[in-house]
Image (cartoon, rainbow, N blue to C red):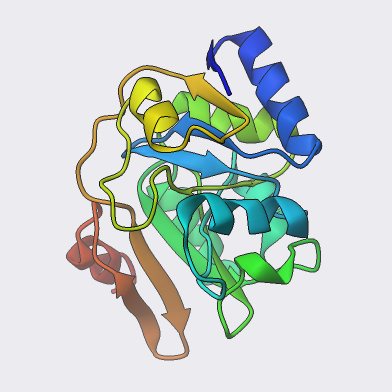
Length: 202
């Protein structure tokens, strides 16, 4: 339960905690998030416990790059083109989950939302782990998300580590998009205007 800088040593320590089943707080391009290894059921269960959140709510993932995202979910040609156009950035794409993910992070239809963020620390954490990380907001359910490392530790004192990458900018969450048979479907409005996604497919 301590804060470490998001330098090379801090990233290595954070990734080691994740491999050991830990939960850490880290900055994203919106707010501080909670990272666990989404392949580990016990680690994901700790996120729900820390947030006081009911089971059965899907958890979004952050990837270091498109190749890493494809290790977590199955992207078709449309999904890859959308990712290449909008990543890194605040657009999450809903895809069928791959076999490595624990069921607790998935939606009821066995899909997962994944994105490559603009924040360098978030990408570096996933790269250092060697797999996607969860990215739900760092706060107990019903509280405003943390925007600093100190806030994250104050809100969630039982996290295993806080990776301090500076203040998160706040603002709207990532836009979440699914790709249906008839085109893109807006799951959650956010930082990327829906019109931009629609225009991309026109």
